[in-house]
Amino acid sequence: MAGKPHRLVFAKRRLEELAIPSAGRVYYYDEKCPGLTLCVTAGGSRVFYLYRKIKGRPVRYKIGSFPDWTVQAARTEADKLKGRIARGEDPQAERVQTRCEATWGELFAYWLDYARRHKKTWQEDQRLYGKFLRPLATRQLSSISCRDLETLHAKIGERSGPYQANRVLEIVRAAFGKADRIGWRGENPAAGVAKFPERSRDRHLQAHELRPLFEALAAEPPLFRDFFTLALLTGARRSNLEAMRWEDLNLAVGVWRIPETKSGDPVLVPLIPAAVNILRRRQNEADSSPWVFATRSKHEHLVEPKTAWKRVCERAGLTDLRIHDLRRTLGSWQAALGASLPIIGKSLGHRDGSPATAIYARLTMDPVRDSVEKAGAAMLEAGGQLTEASGGQADEKN
Image (cartoon, rainbow, N blue to C red):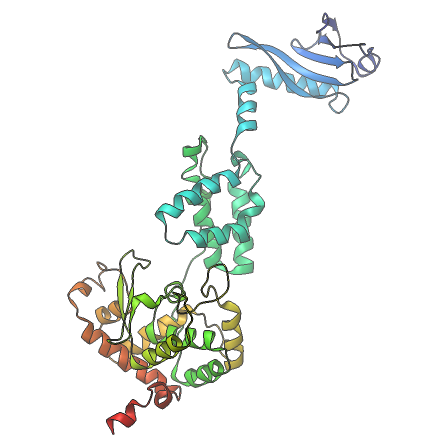
């Protein structure tokens, strides 16, 4: 039970000499700063509070422990709090709200649940969070400033490049855009961070680079050799190729139906004879797995073969070449051989409706297949692979 309050002019020595109560607590009120209180407990603690009525209810707002807080510092803080109260603010309510405020980790958990239902690339968001954003997990949302994100964005840009940094910034901006769903009403700190300029990438394999590539692939295990070769010959996105299923292939007519792509629509991919030969061989050697590129990983199929790709590029002496550049290579060779933009877009599964792809829906598979076959044959010939990859078709024609 609280004891009767005492009034005195606070001073360091006087507060140090205050007796410790045998039980409970005793309150002392500063006569020089109305409302400033020192609570002395039986445990020996001495804590400054501001005692005030806020919206008709008595509130003790904790300032800090004595002697960590000096008398003068406590008086200054008490005056600041009284000024805020006079302006209609409620420091105690704000403090409770801050204590209950959501953290970045909680916001991202909500965002990821939302992204799973609405974004096809949610797994990439999860990966980027684990790599770059997890250290912020315990930070309350109000403590994350625009300056914090500018610093993080710059650091990622230096270490991992501007594209990666911009993707991380987009995730933070999108997640904060949903923060009101979990009760937070603050501003979006990512809104004021400028993205790095991005230049469209045009890297693709030139004719003189194809032979070293195929020679490097020949030294790889069949899993990686076939994967990278099919990436080149189909122009498919890495994620679609990794998740290729036997049930989606019609090798008799040379068509791969991707049930769902980045655009959200199914896509038919023509398979040239060299690609069909690779798939038939894999099919003959396959077990009961539904995946063409089956592995024993938790995903059950190939995912992110970056280590193997790095090994291939180093062996082939190829620089600044990414797996996605294989997709761009097919389109570039099609263009070099005279294919139209709609044909190229159709073969790469681009979304209908853009200026370059508006007439895709009216195209048949025949001109697309012809374009892909021409480009594939040209690449294989440049790489010294035409006879081997064609599976003896030249002999059959003779």
